[in-house]
Length: 536
Image (cartoon, rainbow, N blue to C red; front, side, top):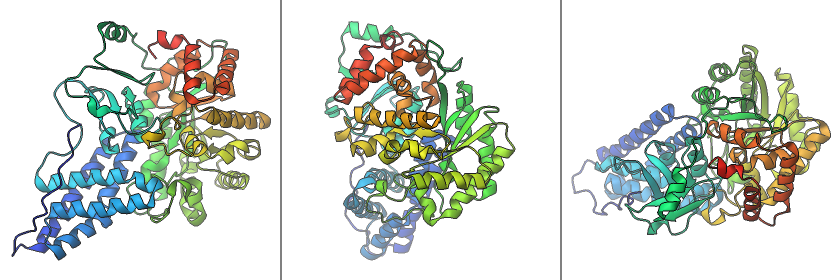
């Protein structure tokens, strides 16, 4: 990645400058950056579209623009210097709040650089374009940059920051770009160095020898489409579903052969707005997704606002720790109409579709929440309602929750974050932020035990589902479906087709018996030679 923009000069505007006009340039530049990001979000898919929409919202945040305008008008600062210093104030405030707020500091700096570049005519910051395919090396990537990576140009990604379930890692997987994150000392790599990047085992080799390069080149071509329903070698069905974030993503998932949708993120109709979308708008959007999967299951998750997806009409700006604050289903406590409108829209879309529509709530923590959500769905004509298991309390009490909910879907990204008390975006905690942690697998096992007790299915829709080595372990723990980015479907199917249900249970025991994540992962991979055969 190129060096960041230098700080603008502190020289003030010359006497006699039209200060209101200079301040208006800040508004114009911020608006242009916002509109550019919104346009990019409109053409992106899935998680990438969400990330770009959130970054665009930050560019339109009046906190930054108003502070910059004040500095121009009151101190005669140049527009670019005013934006720079205003951003520093916002960043300091976010860092002081800590938690998920602190994680947004990088986004503020990204927006700052884009606005300053627009004001000064400098090249926009971001991914280089050397004219040939390359491995991209960075201390870290702004989510907006990661979302816009071109898989035909960027062969692999290596970053010093981030973790295995960070936005960078999730987006790279969705784009099909091999990535290794949380690599110390990446600044030692230079343009022109030859590097071998193996995203399957998390290895970056500088100046690899000829044999290593030859082995990498011999890796077999892998299928790009799921051609048969997921199952183990002895015929145990394992539904292989797709995570989808918008109608375009639904069509991509259908083309990839997904058996259905295990997670429809409905935030695509809510992000970047100051008021919730109306019922009619939501109905139209959901119908477009359902139309791509006639006769197949589509699990619609209700609005998952809060934490890294703040929305002004349901979340507060001053929560000291939004990751542990009002998010997911909790937003309906103070804003029940938003959820009710969404359930009305889902029910109307389902009534006019041939899809098998399920609905589930995020961030369910108690039996009361599960019961109330299921009852609420029934009132709106949605008979199959489930819960996300992202909180350890839900995993430990899964049997009680599933006495009311019709199914559970484990969100392993957040479940890992909460179980390990490890921020998923922090590189220094990367070794904790992985679903290979035996403690996390214990919680998956507890959830599946609750499902068996009540005769309810339990799926996984977090990043863990897309790991071909971890998939047999999850099946061995009792998971009945796996939902993932469409690109991962054929790889997961290929591995599952080589192991029996009993072998999956044995692999689950291997992982649970390990003392740590690295040991669990290494032991399971060693017991699955098919991974090397498939180039995984």
